[in-house]
Length: 77
Image (cartoon, rainbow, N blue to C red):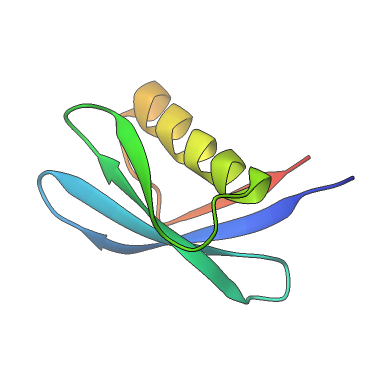
């Protein structure tokens, strides 16, 4: 089984970054928030699926490696 998702930054402030994510058909499937201080991600809307967890992992890893929150991310496997 393959997974594919795109995530777009919706909002960023000093403490948090909110991302919306969807599948390849550009359907919004949920939103994830990154807490910059704790480097934790939380699914705030949408179902808790393997796809949501893959997007959350990508957001957290990218933040930890780069220290920045990119405007767009892609997850594929």
